[in-house]
Length: 288
Image (cartoon, rainbow, N blue to C red; front, side, top):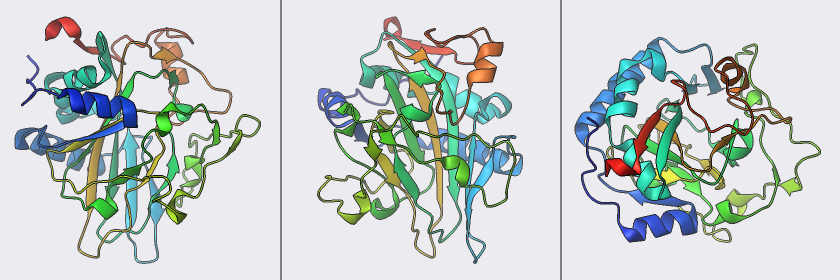
């Protein structure tokens, strides 16, 4: 049986999630789950998937490592997905009838790394569309507000179509077959220079400890999570969850990570509700 939430998700937290597109949840995962994910992350870094790559490597040898969709090969990740209360947490925040798991992703910055994630939204890259999505961003080590992922509250409610960043260019090792996107002809305008005037955009981030998480909608503008102090590293596990209106969508602009081939192999087509054992149903409202 999945573990239970250590406390109720408050009405204020649910309202903040829908109003702002993001909410900080303190002490929502116990130390045992952090230890489970930390063991899994060690395995992940030692034996990356074929999708893994280094997003950044500077002259000092400091790196930013990324990998995704490793859960099927890492028992600790699988344990967390099926047996933690993360799916229930997503369901409560989304006020959903059912929650499917989408995919996992890890972000590992070595000590002192200066690389910051470009500002972007997630949904435009995904083989999914829908408002009812939730990413749970979990640091496995302490993180300072200035180094945590940052958000533009309320930006998930905008219909603006931005020219999103092509993360396929973050490839200093020249790895082949990297997913690419190109929003030419689709985007209405570029993402503004949020870092130049964060107060104008009411940018938020938080000091966090292991056990805290940030939950956010895939449509919110977010970025940062870099420029670490010389004695600081950053290890983050993220899980992506799909609620009631999420449907498969194959995008002509490209997708990153691109699930279209594997979805097709599993018999999923545009407009379908994600399912099968690739995107398993984890939680339903009658489990409450």
